[in-house]
Amino acid sequence: MTHDIQIERFDEALQRVEHAVQQVCVGEFGPFADLWSRADDASLFGAFGPATRGWQQLEPVFPWVASRYRDGMVEIDYVSVVEGAELACTVGYERAVVSIDGAPEAPSTIRVTHVFRLENGRWALIHRHGDFADDDRSRQPGAGG
Image (tube, rainbow, N blue to C red; front, side):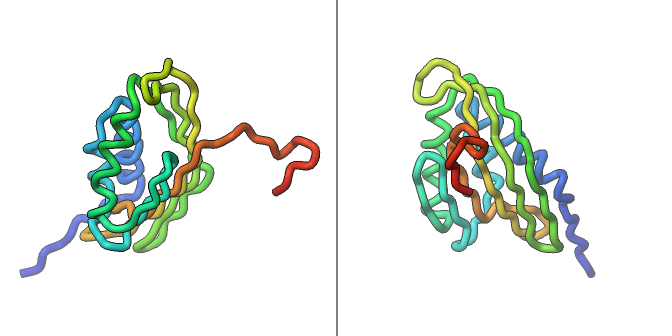
């Protein structure tokens, strides 16, 4: 007897990401945690500072991050989306208007790179690197590249 594994399309995974990031912006961490691989090589270089590896270290970070956000709306602006047979990555911006740490709602932009691996027919997040984006200074005299 064969069991055909239903393979998730990558565009479906991106829909899950967009939903999960929106949930973080209103203080809910569950859908974001569900995106992640439970493997020891999963890693996070978070915008708030945590650099962690492995599910046991990652798991407690998600509720902490989500607890800092309230009343937000976010749009993801992909600069690049690359999909392979078993690995995929996205590069882009998470542009939000959100309250962080109880401050009034304000614009917030995080530059984000995500790396995914196909695990048991489902795209799982295995790495996130995010940092708060400064204003684009590339056109200013003396700006380095």
